[in-house]
Amino acid sequence: MVPLKEYKRSLLILALAFLTYLLARKLSIKPWRNKTYVLFTVALLILAVEPTQFLKKNSEANKEAQEQLKELNKFATTTSWRDSRSDGPLRDYVLIIGESARKDYFHSYGYPVANTPFLDSVPSIKVDGMKAGGTYTIGSLTNMLTVPDKNNWRPRYDRTLIDLAKTAGIKTYWISSQGMVGKYDTPVSAIGKKADVTVFLNKGEYSAKNISDYALLKSFRAALKDPIRQSRLIVLHTIGSHPDACNRIIDFKDPYRVKTRITNI
Image (cartoon, rainbow, N blue to C red; front, side, top):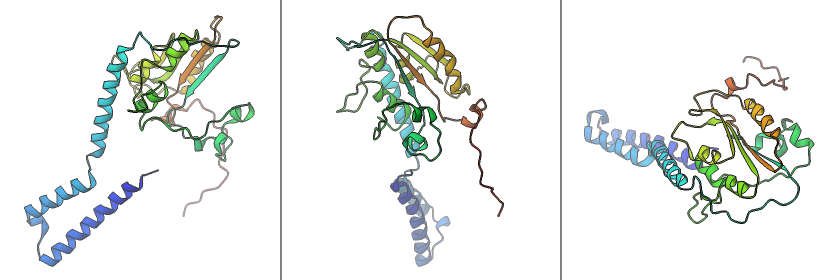
């Protein structure tokens, strides 16, 4: 949903344009011939609507990601988890990270199309009301995959989910169709590489290869067949609906057919 303030900024552009027209009529001037007037108007527009805000936020997000990666490297082989244990029988824990997937597009959460048949057919606990820990992938997942500093709302890389499972004697797997981003690993993939077994189907940036999430199943089956006598945590990090999603689902058989006839008007 587009924030209300963005609509207000759009209306402000129209209001300023109309104000410019009224001033030009009243003062009998032609703005395009008055350089001072033109520069003043442009400066006013820049201050009012901040056209560079997107670039500024993108730069800040990149800077924060690099700072987080440096911090993560300090805890690459250490952890502050202590006295962790896994009670009860041996179990397989599977965590699926669905990138760009909104809950209101899942039948389990009320979407009218029955597109979650497995979840609908098995006993399950649905968590409603959980919010992401950030506005972009790195900021969100690093806060959710660690125990964050809630005062500053920053991740603590010495307390990751992977390290918690490992200290409890659980074998960990990280299987991803996301990009590993070469030697400049993102903080998310760096957390994943702390697992006992890591599989990155895309060794470069996420857009380097258009890999279907179904390709994860081969590595997932191999993890399930791993002959071990301990519990397992298997994380499947999907690429979800990131571009180019339409070309990435050619191996997906569409079970839905549109019945409504569309006619040209």
